[in-house]
Image (cartoon, rainbow, N blue to C red):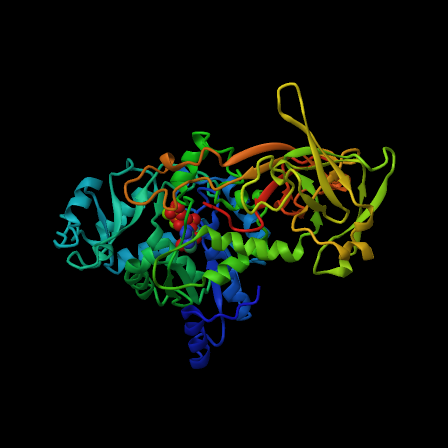
Length: 554
Ligand code: ATP
Ligand code: MG
Ligand code: MG
């Protein structure tokens, strides 16, 4: 996706390039914590970081911010790499882990202690919190704030050596307990955790905090522009403070730039809530096609291009706002309208018998693979005396304005003939078993006769002796409420009970050969993808990714 729109981040980079601040270098990073699966909000950050780097001939790093060993796992690292690659981005040799810097981070902490810029606090976590003050009251210094450099160094080394219990001591930056910005009131930068780390194993029992780690990792990697979401705006003074103290030891001082996070209607994106949905089995796993996880939207049928388009369309700004789910769906429609071949599926079949069509006659009809792309050619769709149409395309008691098949009416079977209603055949229970019609042999599509008569309805069909059965899943939005988790609402009360429907439908025979992840437009029914997990050779399962038009709530 080529970006044309301008945004404030591009403006900053253009200005840096003009002044030569970074000698024209642009280096960004996407820094997930490997403690869960990525969602569509992360995709905004991925597209932004990798997109900006690409646009300015720079590079974007993939860096795992792995400083909370208890919550992190290799499973998430692998899934995140997979998601980023799937989205179409390449970090080249720039795959990094914050844990790779643990030795340096530790050495810098000793340096801060030696410089009198950090101290060991032996208060409890509660005491620290209490003395930190609030937005309206200043903080109070810890009774341990004036420990000597020698004592601080000794305690820090013994913390590292494993001499103390968790919570006995922390290392704090010595900044300003009366700062109006609470983040600057001597933030904790190291804590004791006897936890096994998936990469450094049992080497460490002290781990650095996010705010301390992130800025140093950025600098060590020579990042130029460190893009993050708005909630880190208040942390920027700390980001800069740490780098300023260490300026002689670091190659550069990256610029932190904040942008608004993505909020999308009809979904939830916090990791905690996604985990809850999965663990309480309210959805079918992390890659449930109704979830906003990237694994989920991928299964649903979202393409990398549609997500890139979406990220470009919503742009980046400094103000939080909500994006309607319809915008995301439209991006997918646009992509698939252009790229998906057309096929026919009858989702809820109704038998239609053409009384005046010879019993064993067969003939070919021709359907374009893409109406705007004649170069994609046509395929044959065999016609026969018995066909299936959609139940929805017939109404025994039609409402006003219903132009499909009805008693006394005529309709075109797309690519074939105009047919005329004759009678309804009902079974012993009084249900419709079949519709009987007659066809007009002079009206075949593609012949001169076809142009002589016009009918309003034009419906799709499949010959009964050709149609193959497949499993099809129709999805709807997971929540009924556009803001399922706003305010103090419990998002679980807003779950849409009809968000998944499984059907056994009829399709053209060639669709049995669909490869996992192949996308199609099933004419009039929407865009579908062969499920990448549940499809088997010769036995695809299709997911509806999106309907042809936005009809939600109508
Ligand atoms: P959560 O708060 O749900 O745990 P997180 O933001 O902490 O998620 P990270 O793994 O730290 O998850 O996120 C990696 C990057 O993705 C961060 O730079 C973060 O700013 C960005 N990001 C996360 N959510 C969004 C969002 N909704 N919109 C844009 N960027 C996001
Ligand atoms: Mg985070
Ligand atoms: Mg978080």
